[in-house]
Length: 334
Image 1 (cartoon, rainbow, N blue to C red):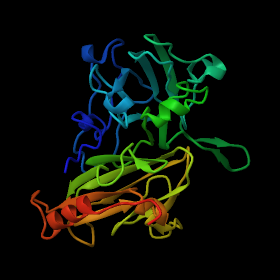
Image 2 (cartoon, rainbow, N blue to C red; image 1 turned 180 degrees about the horizontal axis):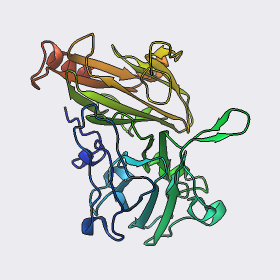
Image 3 (tube, one colour; image 1 turned 120 degrees about the horizontal axis):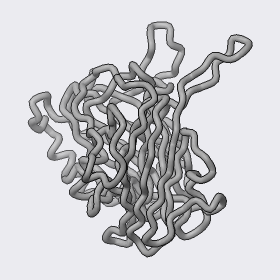
Image 4 (tube, helix red, strand yellow; image 1 turned 90 degrees about the vertical axis):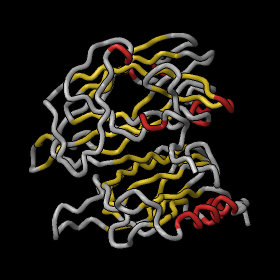
């Protein structure tokens, strides 16, 4: 089964889009941002207040889908994972190669009305138009009365807000969405990243058994970004793995009061993320992730998290489990 979850260029979405300094403006091909790879638990490091400039291409895909990509011909569903550190600015030049009005709208960061990405503020790309959107972030600051104003760090997302309706309902339904991560300096970086978007009865615009199969080797640090869209309420459940219900998914010490969970609400417009060590305490195998609304999982909202042996080989029983999943009939309301 293909673990790329969105086409042959899905590897762009499974890597951190991190630039350690300001990037030259213009097409991505002229000055590509650094694509983070196997950090394996290293602490995050970045210079304060850098501006990262990238170009994103909105393209029509087969099956009447649309996607965002970092280079022409590389659009995927979901789009690439965009990352920044608190204090950074992300300058996005969006090239609309389609015949549809569309935009890019972020959650969780700071922006002016000109970069809102909504027709309400006349912020969108007409067909064939190129437009620049500027997203800013900030660190936590002390306030009066022993209070702190929160910073931008968190697992957020971005999406179209202009195709089909003034709220981008058509664009979101057709795949114009992706993950946005704002990190705090010192955060642990993962080895692999997976984006799972629950939209109506689909995961990344697919239904089982065609849903993404995400893969890692035993012990690898894996980061999940879960995003909700559409009109239905969901939960996100990951078999045999658990995380702390806080900003990072990790406990900060023995007295950290964060609830440890393996199932969390994932509703339209919401997002969260967490890190786990693949197979920690349970070993390798084919583990399921799915919506725990029973009719939704029955209807095809399920996928596989394949944890291979530490050497990358297939663990006993995993191939058989994958074949059973591929052969299972998912029927809404069964």
